[in-house]
Image 1: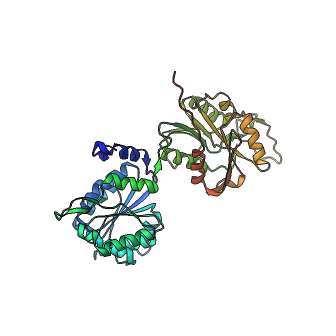
Image 2 (image 1 turned 135 degrees about the vertical axis):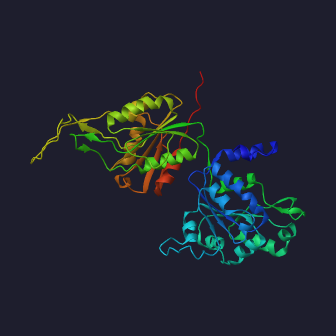
Image 3 (image 1 turned 135 degrees about the horizontal axis):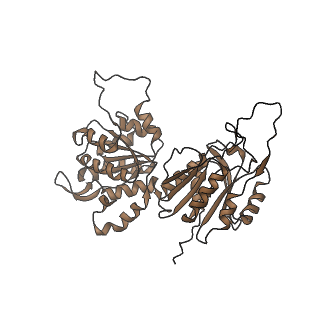
Length: 419
């Protein structure tokens, strides 16, 4: 983020910010009526460069210092204000109430600048504008960046409100020392954006632990044709694969997806396949250029020995002869380089851990994630993660997003071998 580089002394801070990611995070920026409000257009731009989704709410007086149209253009979202509806602006009674809708989607509420009046209302629970309705309605963290005249900041009442808000769990980026718009010199200046963004990242950011790494993820259920209109498949929904793609991208990885389905999340490269054979060919081609293979696809263990050229006519009894498919992950893991990591998923109905421990040794795997058929199509699952040394990590019923992050945390990717 070159726009954040303001001085050589801030290089370490900028480096830490550049290693963070806000992709997939929704930030509600609440702007109150102080002179520092004019700076928020740049703040929105900087947060968006880290991948955040920005929604803006403004107090009645904030519009005197910054144009809502500028913020709408920069955030690419509607700006919400406490102003009254125009007479010609219809009220949609079926629409979600704005402050509840925003409160529910927020990962963080950032109040910048926060005036003394704002802090007083927050401390007493007054709810007479959309900002304060939103704060009371959300369960997201609240991050406050005050800005005001130095005497107002140092006033006993303001400091009492500051301490009270901190005591109930609100987070602060304290104002900085400097010359203020009123020509006073002292504490009260809105903190530099580097400091604000670092605080945002510390609360909800994702460390770029996989920056520079290339991760290959297979997902979806393969289809093995019986005839031109029928096929053999399974119940895999791809949700675990979607979560792994999202988590790997958020941590800075370059992701290639080999998939049997459309992706709701972006990947750097997508290879569409349908059958076991097509997935095998694609993974054989892609794996040598990747650091990690995560084999979450539900690949058919059997396929029809012959595919009928024409639709099989309805008959009382039908016999289809199947043959076993090759074990893709075992083949790729057997030929992996010393700096490559292979992760497999295993679905079992009995003796799951014993079978997983056997598979991890027999197939030369680095990690195996064990779950049950109940995970198919569900948003949550119970899994066990087993590594090559037999160390076991159990996750009780957890979201697939959390499971994906835990799997990535368990990766131990060796450095690339040079030469």
